[in-house]
Image (cartoon, rainbow, N blue to C red; front, side):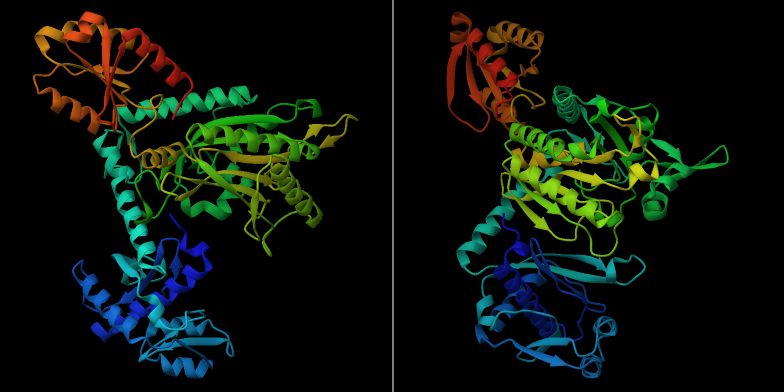
Length: 577
């Protein structure tokens, strides 16, 4: 799925289309006032104050019809430069535009006009509205002015625009497919997780979801053990003093849950790093001990705005697959290079491709010496090159404490998700006064890497649900095999024997011997997305064989039971897709 913001031509078209939509809204709702209409990855939106009127689903086609008239009329879009005085006079009846103008510098104000509609805007825009005929309004919602719940609720209309009708239709088909794959819908149907008003934004994992979660965590531990990681577990709640040392109290307090214990203020951890730093500081370390790789599946809590919560994608508590690596400065490049290879191996198991972004030093807010920043950025860039990976520079987007590599995975619909990250930290080792003993007996400051691969277990499961559309690879599926006897009386004994044997071998197998038609039971197993259904009838009993129906297939094949077990064992062991 294309990212509109990343495509220069589509970005300009969608911004122009937002103006065309605003023009149509103004015609239909003369009292409408407009806040902002930016381009987003999915297209565009505009926030609108319609007074007492409310946009409903049935209103979108009316707005689209008016937009088509405007596009057909084909007016040119004209750029105008105006003074601040002229801008204030032009938009004197729109308090939202006046608010925007107050922050603009005189001599640098532009607006764009098409027909009777004019809007404050930096641009650029397409030449004529005639270029904007392939569009679709997608949805509407409420949105607080400036994102502040204390402000008035505006109405937000979303849309998207493409150059050709074919591109638009392809995009709309992908959106429909994405709806079918919605992890909240599939999670409910497969009994993976639930949410409750008693714990907003805090997911409850159900038995089937716990199977997937436990398998992912076991896989994580196995792979990290191969890479020489040591595992730790740090407290979920620590005192205010610790968060003051780390800097979180000053910069992140509004997102932290706090409480009083024995007349001391404590906070539930929003991040795992301070705990890892305390563990490192607990013992004396030599240069020979480094790099020291510390892994923790640590549960964190962050107070997210209620309007931002979204299934497993945006929650208030989640488990980060954190690791903190302490190393000597001369080990940065080699350690990052090995880490890139490790991340590559993990993502390949799930069939996920990715791209890497290198975020460099912010222009103003940063700590540390410029020479150290340049050396660190070069080390990250060289590590990508030596690992055989291309990267894109994202200038000025590094954390204030160091540059970072972000891994944007691409799912089966082509959507990107930022999951993995490698962050170089020049701040916390200093704040916590960490040191190791050099070969000459002197003390030296270690370099610290923060890194995640999944990002968070919860969000990664949500991504996998949509990536696989609920059809998990056999090694990860909550139920791997459904054994279905044709008739209960005649075939249930052999079917039960097969089911018991599979479970004894460690497979997740179930028996469906209900008094229902065979077709109904097979369809239900297909709807539950069970990878294998084994149909057992007279022939299977006679030959000690199984007839296999695979998920998403109407074809069936028959093979000896032992052969099926060998095939299933290899598929699970090798984590085949």
